[in-house]
Length: 259
Length: 221
Image (tube, rainbow over the protein chains, first blue to last red):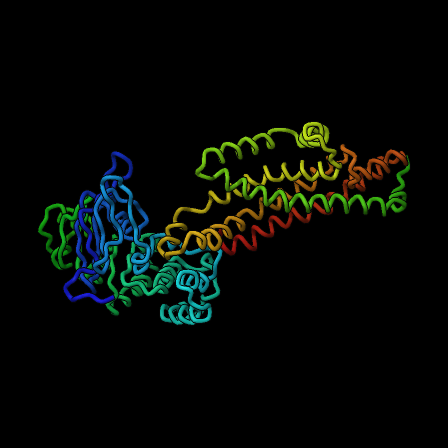
């Protein structure tokens, strides 16, 4: 994909999403993400963070608005018939990792990794297996290639899930609370892997409750509450010296005392 | 009263033939019934109201009536309605297949339902086409999860198959009953017949536990 330096990688325009007639989760969200940015989305539960990521992945219908990736609109909805149009070709450039691993339990680690490359891109088994093995080695999981997900720890499962998403060479990674279901001692190994990707300038959007991690990985932090962007800026500002009162309240509560 | 089990030896060939008929009938109905049950299970989870309604009526009807009545109805009433003769093998196969289809459809339905929506999220996030989602992700998990209950369903069918003796099919039960009547040795003959059924059914029920412990525990599904 070629694009000029200043063109946004992702452009979200006036995104509205509700569950049923009464629950409005996203109330006109506008976000632009530049290439190479690592955006961390924070905010109270029910504020629409996870919904935003799910919408970007095409897992949820939207009421209105549009999302472009690399200049191409790939998710849109005309308010007339409210039908969500999704361009699956463009969507394939985006990878996502979920809170609850979502590995396929009946497939071994290596089979989990090669399923999509073989079935979606028609890659040969041998070539996909080779790439998968290399990726597993890189994430310290070389010995687990033939294990089944149930035989892995939560942290290992999540690293496999990340590797599985990377097998499709995504141009953007979405991480939806990927450490929330983990025991505290396993959080670091998953965050290390994500930091490793960050070091290779993989663009990513991360929803997390872990403020230490947010501070370490973000090139930009968005505070989302009540379905809108409340504050948007560099991590030092949003986490360290928030301008908005709602952000300040939230940061005070999660850090207990502001650093 | 002196028991003489040696008379069984005189009839071992007849009993073996009867057992073979029972096993054959069970195997045919397991294959046909499981296939029917899988599609009925899909129909019951379908979006179409008509498919759901028709399949539900079928399943509830066959689960809610005695197999013996179903068998008699197919043996005696169906030929009258269709105007064709049905051999006792054919009516036995039809009755037990319909019975097996009804009970296994519930097994498949439960296993399909137990696959969480997050598995589908993962499929979408990986860009898997619908066909691959079904054949590589949903179906294998549904079948694996269904195996223990399906094995129990097979054991039930194997035991229920003894009912076909009531329409004159020469299965193990029928042969046993005949020998018992002709020799006036019901205790010896029927005890041995019961033992034969048990020796086949019991390992199968143990296999259920084995599959649950070994295979499903390893996959945690």
